[in-house]
Amino acid sequence: MNKEFDTTDIWQNDFDWLEIRHKLKEQLDLENLPDLQSILFLIGVQELGQIKEDFTKEEKQDLMHIATCKLLSYEDFYSFQGLDADSWPHWELTKPIPFKDLKEQEYYLQKMATRYINENL
Image (tube, rainbow, N blue to C red; front, side):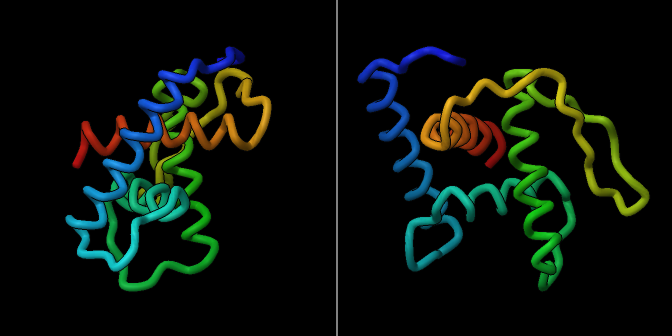
């Protein structure tokens, strides 16, 4: 990544991200627009393929990690290694992640989450 994003890229990402958040709010009948953490959780549950009434705090963190790995796999930062005995997916880091700061990481995750949702939901 390590490039500066031009204004058009940032504007388009912001627009697409807001559109996805509204789409999820409607589809899930939410009171508020979901934030990045909530969307990562939803993607993690989708990738896990198991629905439970309540996930533990640790499981929620694991689900967001699964989502992050899935999203970063679009650019080959992670590769899928398989499922464990409980059918939870595991990923391996395949190359260093080049984010300079949290803002760049968030931008990228929003962009990849938008792609994921458009392709899968």
